Amino acid sequence: MATFSIPLSQNGFPRSFYSAKRPQLVSPLAPSLARITCCATVDGAEPKESLSSCKHIGTVACGLLAVWALTNTTPVFAATQRLPPLSTEPNRCERAFVGNTIGQANGVYDKPIDLRFCDYTNEKSQLKGKSLAAALMSEAKFDGADLSEVVMSKAYAVGASFKGVDFSNAVLDRVNFGKANLQGALFKNTVVSGSTFDDAQLQDAVFEDTIIGYIDLQKLCVNPTISPEGRAELGCR
Image: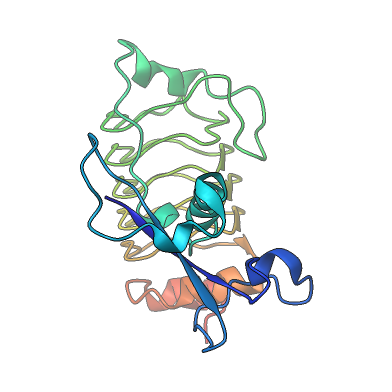
């Protein structure tokens, strides 16, 4: 059984629907607000809660309000959303050598690039300059690989290993490097925009002439694993 409670104003409409000045959903319920409770059952079982509060607006309206409630919740669902199943394509790891030929900036693709758990250790030629937009890279190994001039927009690289990787002249745009191992990685003349490095290992990483925005720099400088030399190169305070 699923129950949805929607705060309504006295005229029966959700406040966020008609208020252009305050589009946010009002979380605390004022005493003057009515409450609509929608109840659902499974396999014809009787609901534990009464449907009496739904009778005023009808079943259809109550269902619409339930959909509205799901689509206007806080973005917790996005943060905990599971990744798609691992691709069963036999040569999925080789797709990195072709890359993504469309939608580089926005991570648009005709077919997902699933590189999870692939091993590109010491790959020196076939990854350079490729577009890996929206690639799934979690738990993949790129240790010692040449990723110079690559375009990684909206890539998901949580838990991946990039030890000693050459990111020179690369574009790392909105990449999630959470918990990734980037020890000794070279970010020479690399564009870093909107990328996150939460709990990433950045010991001995080189940030020579790295191009990074002020807000991104502030977030990156919080990482305690960056060496004093790296902090000086970045201009961390």
